Amino acid sequence: MATGPGLGPYEAKGDLHQIGGGQGGHFWYTHTRDTAHLGGPGGRMTIDGTWTLDRNVEWTRVFAHQPDTGAHTQQAHYVIKGVAGGDRHRYVNTHFGANTWVELGVYRFTGTPQVQLTNTTADGTADEDVAWDAVAFQPLAGKPKHMVVAMGDSYTSGEGTGAYSPESDRDHGESDWNACRRSDNSWPRKTLLPGQSTSLGELSDNRSATVDFLDVSCSGAKTSQLTPGDPLPWGEMGNYHEKSQIDSGVLSPDTTLVMLTIGGNDGDNFTNAVTNCYIVGVCDPADYTGKVDQAVLDTGGLIDDIADAAPNAQIVLMGYPPGQHRAMRDSRFRRPEPAGRLRPRQAESQSGRAEQGRNQGGFRRSDTCLPGPRNL
Image 1 (tube, rainbow, N blue to C red):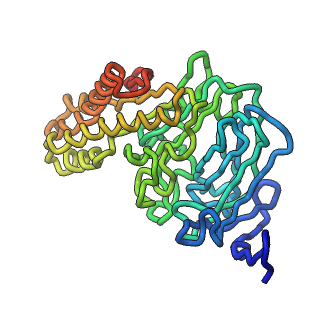
Image 2 (cartoon, one colour; image 1 turned 60 degrees about the vertical axis):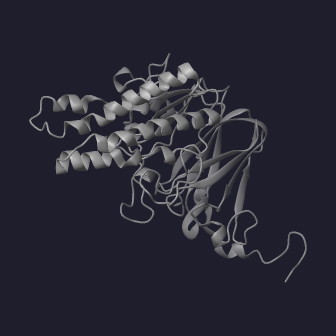
Image 3 (cartoon, one colour; image 1 turned 30 degrees about the vertical axis):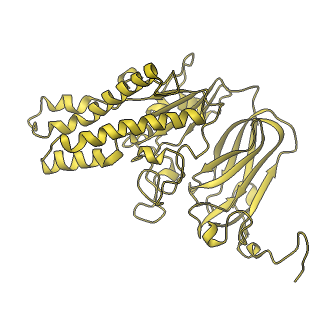
């Protein structure tokens, strides 16, 4: 056996494969591993691959290509190097099942542009594939005027509106399932930003130089699945095997706007209210209001976490639609009406919390606001 610097058995080569496919007809792949499965920094089965651009650029949009096979992990860990302020970490769900480009973000490069991808993941059990296919750089004339991030739960992701991105709606009932259901029809994508006559989603699809838009919302998400730290156990509704929304790396000091809805799923309030109030028909608001109040407090902490990661962004916490309980007033099904009040109560409580935060410094961001959906 060879010994010395740079020499040795390199066991990880036994799990590094190449195949025809993807961008350019060739890519490499291996299996994801955590430290318990010989992954992690310096791990015997750790594989890191790096792309290096052969020219200097400044503001640039970076993409990673995902092949139609051999890319399964929901937390591919990309590190973008040479960026002003230091390395930037970006975690991506790669399970599209189709040849496609995925945006990592817009970055200001001050050094040699590099993108690194590792097979180390927090959920890696040597079962999921990760692929090194291709990366692309789109140089921009300057920083986009609007750098927007959408976060939160089903009201942001667009649950029920169809046209879901394939990596966010697949394999129901299996260990690697994902039902975040990020929709092309979500309200963030329909938003018209100031000075724009084209929707945010269309501008993003056309890779506009004036706008950058990243969406990590997930149907069923709770506040704990947005805050920093791995949302264990993996596979739960609200994040599945995706990293927490803040840890995904979409937020930065470059972010100008963060839009979200959150809190309605905390304490399983929404699910339990629908079951008990509308199906069983037994509904006592006292069973829910304490959890609603806690969700409002947790939302305040989440806003502070977002402000830490995106200190220059306006944060818009949207309210939940109030129409349900109003419609119940004219319905013959009047007994479960208190359940309809839960989301309006939460919206009112969150609005009050936002106002209190602005007045008393409870939120560190003076420009945190909570408009109702009708005002969008």
